[in-house]
Image (cartoon, rainbow, N blue to C red; front, top):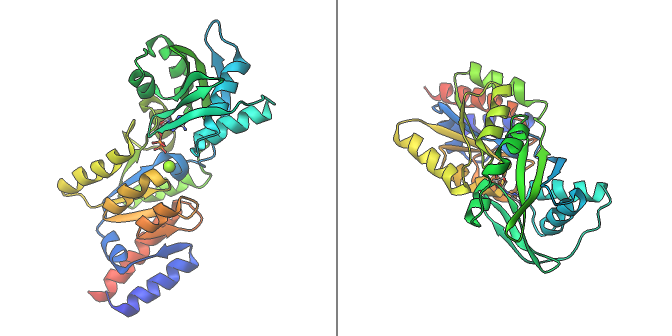
Length: 292
Ligand code: ADP
Ligand code: MG
């Protein structure tokens, strides 16, 4: 494309809330046929809230929440924020956790009142040598509502479950419909559980999902699609999404997301709404039409 046509597109994009960082992204986007979208913070608000605390027999609801929230004070994950806020709203007094460690894509571990506590998904429970099977039914009932369920471990026992819900952004359903109509193959990728992912995807009419993915998996999924000949854009907001945004033919960051995601992307959607992608596609097509 000519510098002039790119300047025009960049100006129009900026007015419409789509920041175009480089000309290559604009040129490449015309050929993109596959769109990978992160779930949390991209399709959803990314502001989950605590909706349930389910103690196991012999454990107390307030105590399970106290352990979980005390530990999560050390984490910056949106799920952690939901749990801490939930505890504060319920006026639960928190303790100082020690030995805090984040286990990427799985959860957190540490000590509360000197006792080992862990909080996270099934993979974390298994990594710690425990079997989550007995709680599967209870957990699945929440996941089928689109909630994210986390296990709370105290010592060598599962003390209970905590569940959070993250509402879909108001603009997401219409944007997805428009993107489908433009002919994109749309795949939702998430670190979340398959069951939760399916519940959210089916409400949004997304028929392809990649669930339980670790941050490094997102970039690998994109590379594999590229090797199969697809031209891939990735939309994401998180620190975890940065490698995938860089791997994609076109990375699309949410302006509401992490700085490192924005730095890794070719486009930034200022308001964090996916309808910006529809605009970006039109700008890309107009720019490329100009040079032919
Ligand atoms: P996403 O791709 O949905 O943004 P992440 O890779 O950040 O997901 O996390 C994947 C999963 O790991 C979460 O769904 C959750 O079950 C677990 N997890 C990650 N961080 C935490 C945390 N701080 N507390 C509890 N669970 C966590
Ligand atoms: Mg995210």
